[in-house]
Length: 546
Image (cartoon, rainbow, N blue to C red; front, side, top):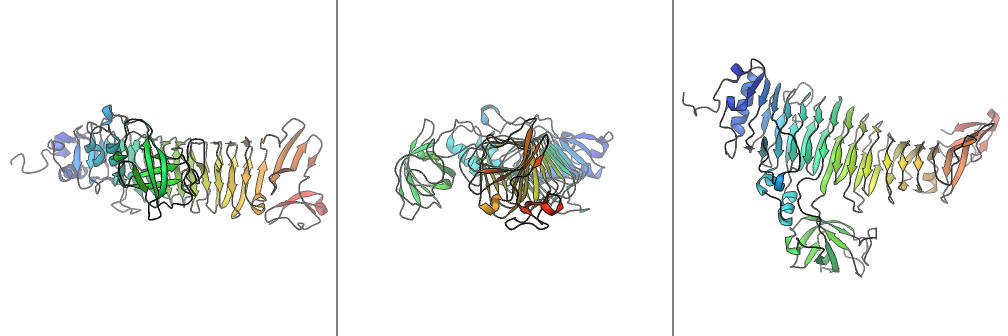
């Protein structure tokens, strides 16, 4: 038979006596310049699967594919890549062991499969070459789309398409809308990958334990120092949007480098905060831009209001990704630990989850004032999740809790900011945390409990009804608590006027509750639901109203 009459050159089964085969021993033509190796690659992997599975070491040559590469059940596809992110000259077309899919294609794993020691690089990033101009970097970032690695096909249980018990480890996955996507596949191990995508890991509909740990999500695909534009004028563009006149802050960038549609940050001058600035009302935010001429752009979707005075900046960020470092949706028992995320819009999102453990993670935000810029977002009835210790740095809002259920954050440093913590609903517990920022609470909360914390100037803002649902026990609040061998103030109530009132203290000879209302057998008027009161008819014990 002629050598090129079939994509399969050798019998993989004969080479798998020890469970190992090199891809070149199956089809040495793969990775030799073809624009689409999908069919040859899939045929080779299927031959290994038909022989009972095993380890396939891939060639270091790049493999381009416009259809999914399917890693069958019981096949481990491995390379020898040490997945460092920073590349010489910031060019990703020389990374060995690379898969380069088109936007519609992905590398997909079935159950008991693995992908290890490989690179999966977005087509736009691969073909861009050296990222040495702002225009080239913006085109790559705007073009991030598709999914690099997909585990399963969304089916669950014993489905042939399911990816349960798969491993994705020690890979470089960059240049996509989503780096790793899982849906319905349980008992996964996603570890020690380097990722730079708009959303790095999207983990969905998993109801058995899965591990997402030790992944690094830095910003690795920009090579230019950060530049921004000073705003010298702002006016109505005639359609109600803001038109800004710009002056570059430094060399290396011009207004003509800005890519139409690229999302830029319109922000206050240095030293100012808030959505209203420079005479403009509620102008701050993130907007796609539309070029007008060599010095002006329109902020698409903005609303011009007010009278511009002076100042403001427009920042076309190369080091900001628009999704989440890790998104966990509708999953139980997932363990998210020791991950590092840098400059994503959100660090970690837990939505419709229960019993997720999330600890030893570090998320560093981009550092611009925007309400959607969140380190940890606990939402959509997420319940019984234990989060900590973690660190959320730079983010405008470090933690937002708008789930209607109970969740606990412990041992976490929460940095400064006007809305460092936002509790909009449910029951939220902060245990042994260092809290340097301020907190905003809504009337819809059931309870906010702060235990054993170090509150360095914390201010809690909310209505009188909301503040009555706050319980602080054993906390160190400068100027309020006394913590000595003689007396410990254990329960503090924050009043509507912002002052704090001692409600329960323990001393050498006495337990006192001077801030509680007293009733005889029934809760006195003014005691809120779930609030504490003293029952004089029962020996002056502290009770809680149902």
